[in-house]
Image (cartoon, rainbow, N blue to C red; front, side, top):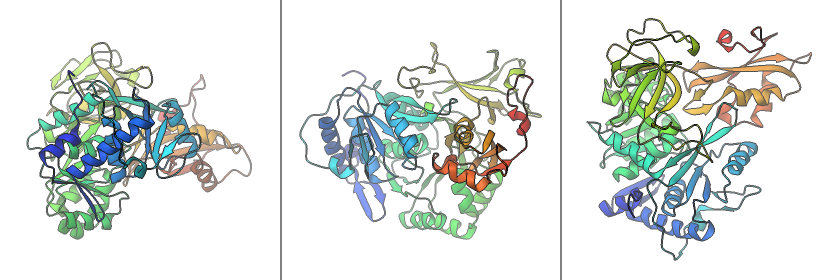
Length: 498
């Protein structure tokens, strides 16, 4: 088959059969072990699911079982649909129904869908595996949409592999075959799935899995296993920087510290560097881009506040609402009116802000099921994020055209929280905005206009939300207000709330 999809696990097993692949607690598997389990899982899945792009839900924690199941789904020519085990029943049911999932691999039972456990896949099973094309759909990753319901981003085998190839062109390498990589970012997230787990397989490196992040325990694991690369989010570095002596002693083998998924406070970065002597590399990307687009690894690794420059092989422009290009891979263009973007940035000392628009082999194929809202006919896709380029040509995030809130990198749209709050009988109107949070980067803050007297308490409203929303989507704070600002046409003025 021409343009066959790359099987990273099989290649890793051929290159380093006895190399340690995955470590979780006291369990260690070589790449040969992983390859064998993936083979058995793929064969078993082929007997359970229609091979023609059938969707397989994966509702598991950050574990060896998840890793083996995911790679088995890809090898079988099926489509992986990783979902957050912390989802409520409503959220889980919506995604499984939307993706038309025919089988779920999970540790329990989910009403209305056929489920199997990871151990059910680790059984002897005959059957040859299909040849999988690089352009074939590999993963559906659900990411929140402006409607308040998640949408499935369609990522092909080729897009996933392309992001590794783009990162490989950076020198010195971010991850290499001799690295021991900490994997604690959840695998249902594009960052944890491809930048973390995918990179380990791509390089035949070693992944150390930590399902639940705890600052003290993670540092113990890092020291015991000789971790050389940390793939983390802001909250992790913030937690480690609060115990500088312990962190400094545990991270002596660290070669690369990577932070993505949400903005990293420059003060946190400075404290981490002071404690460990290591600079944190900042990355920026989206689920739809598999996920990395830019990084300080290709510009100034020590520049705080910047998201760096595009990866080799990624074309990036800053564009106004009128379609005029302000900046293209380092080439400034004449500034145009940005009034429609409804934002203001002063003293950028570079270009005016504009929407980040990208093109590259790592882009998704649009949203499930019909590919709508994907790259245009020329391959360009607007991210919805606003940035400016400083005088050095490094990019800085400013805002988002939409209302996305990034909680440790997890996408949260206010509309989803507002939909739940509005359903409470004691709520007349609700508005949710992002507020800075030192632990998670951002957090949802809800303004609520009561409909009853006495009004519902913030604690009562949080309990109500907790029954319908995953924990990371819950409003960190709820403020009762007499009214919300509106325009003459009745449109909510969220800018005034900010």
